[in-house]
Image (cartoon, rainbow, N blue to C red; front, side, top):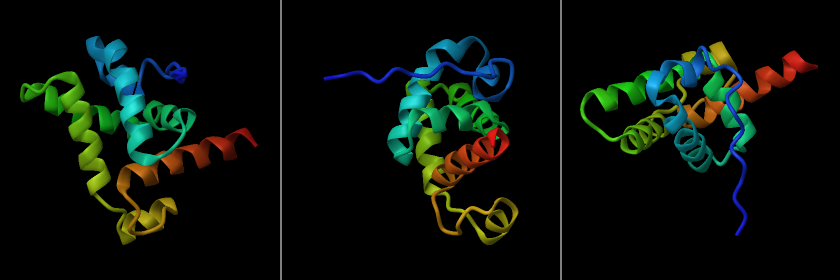
Length: 121
């Protein structure tokens, strides 16, 4: 069995990593794995999402779970499931070009990857 290497955060001052403060080092690999498994997207795409402003909002959701007493893993898993349970609505679809009805988390992971690719082109 091979273990996939978790890409390091490229935005450790902001995004998910920066927002997680003292929990960042422990939270990063848990979040990377949870989001990748939930969305079916590669770790590199998940890193791009977590490094973005959307990743910061995801971290806010995780922090809310920690505040209510959840363990780090439980807070990340709850946020992941919550974001997967939401769907892209008409307004968000128009604003970001993400297909309506797609799970919110999947949509924004893919959106962040597309934006990064277009900036690199």
